[in-house]
Amino acid sequence: MFFQRFFAMANYSFSSSPSSSSKTSIQAIYDICKKNLTPISAPPPEVIHELSSLLDTIGPADVGLKEEHQEDDRGHGLSTPNTFNRVDRWAQPITYVDLNESQSFTMCMFCFPTSSVIPLHDHPEMTVLSKVLYGSLHVKAYDWVEPACIKDSKETARAPVRLAKLVVDKVLSAPCSASILYPKTGGNLHCFTAITSCAVLDILTPPYEESAGRKCTYYRDYPYSSFRSGDEPVAGKEDEYAWLEEIETPDDLYMRQGIYGGPPIQI
Ligand SMILES: [Fe+2]
Image (cartoon, rainbow, N blue to C red; front, side):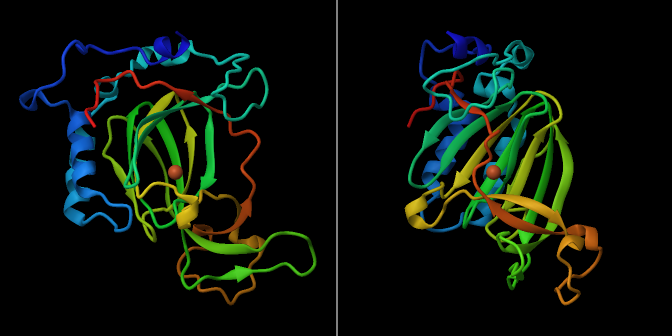
């Protein structure tokens, strides 16, 4: 009941399956993914283009979200088996909604309460398309400097830090174009901060799969000046670089599972 209210259905009829002539946008996106994405190879540019063009056209109603309901849900004291992690009883959870999971790709949504954060994390060997459906989201994203520039600390117990370059630091406000990150470019390591209540539709390909080396790792970033020694391969402004330290999954990452309430997706 709680999720049904949160993910209220938009103005869709669910009484019949969509025919090919009235295929929904989300079905069209799914069909492209199913036809073209694989567990092992990066999607070709024409598929990326096709997907991002379709993502550019969709909004919250296309996936069953009603923007005006988002602030109704404060998440106070929520405790369910689907809660991934608890912080305190006043925190508002980020809601994760799984639309489809396969060996080739994941389609999912994140619904953020205002000021909530998905901390800096990576997408190893993955391509990710993201579309802000409503609201405003700050994105800060890095790519690793190659070849790897790593500083070990001999004096402290601190973990090694690795040099990264800032490639995105901006607010995305709907309606806006889809953004794309690649294994080595486009901001593969990123942090999301909700400026307002907002939602993002993600397509990840291939999906996270720890046994295949695609594990989600979290990081803390330090200013370049923190560990500068002067011999780093830094070009341009120093404030465009940072040192990233691998950390455990942050305790204050508070997520719960939501239920998809949009148009049915025929698998
Ligand atoms: Fe991400």
